[in-house]
Length: 359
Image 1 (cartoon, rainbow, N blue to C red):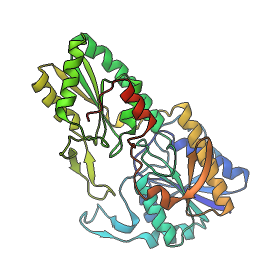
Image 2 (cartoon, rainbow, N blue to C red; image 1 turned 45 degrees about the vertical axis):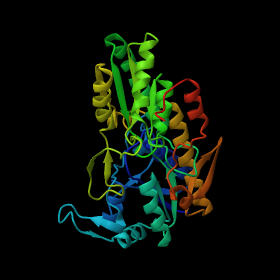
Image 3 (cartoon, helix red, strand yellow; image 1 turned 60 degrees about the horizontal axis):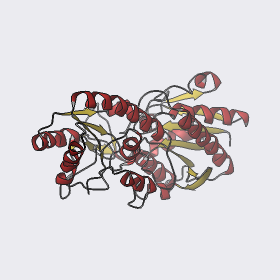
Image 4 (cartoon, rainbow, N blue to C red; image 1 turned 60 degrees about the vertical axis):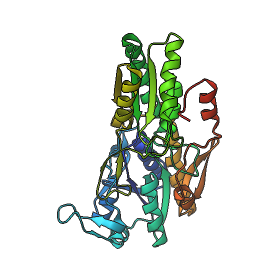
């Protein structure tokens, strides 16, 4: 093993720079060269590389985002040149292989979520040596107990809830906080419990509006003149659909969710006659410095990925199982999304506290 390439694909996530730093420092100890690929798979297709050494990774551990840049578009197998015709896609995966071969790269370390690792798996099927590293604030990747970035997103949402709590209580309002997570409710569930939410709505449990609205009435009967709702962006009413903000051409998942908080807020205000406000936390959940837990987890992933490459364990993804970092086939990670199961102990704890889940 003489040379590694690393890319960060998909949405940005706290801890990406910690992984890059760990990869470079671990590789350097074994005399392995590392190059970065700029802007995710876009750089892989276009051959845009950046040498990575101690100087490039110095001081990046606490930084959010990624020094390499990223993109949630630019699938090499359906590549769109937006400067020419955004309606035409072509397979440019061979260009990726050619650029990496020209750089004498022995293996690609792909840091990404479901979409990015799907692409990595397809490249592995074409003969590229690939190691996957699980990244997403949504925590929806199978085969790993947790992805880095998730805990930082939860902490950010919990802090927002602490602040919203005080203003909701002061004005006797219903306040709804809409959180990210796509089709999984992990962020909303964990942040909702940590932030003292009265109602938590997640995609895995379609909600019944009458039960949600009655939660406000029950709190009023107990002398509580305010309520805190946490709503995952993928939450939907029983028999209804998720709210789609818009479609984005070129993304692996073209549907950008958003707007369920506003929809529910209008309905609640009309039913309860209680002033209702909606806060959409949005990309604040993705930004900023990673917390200590995510810095450590990301560092462990980076070290383990280099070790897997040195051992020739290609086509695998590093994963957290209990306290251990292991290797699993990438195919196990992207076979399906990891959703909140109905027997999840954290979900059970929420119900035990009397938190309304909408069912």
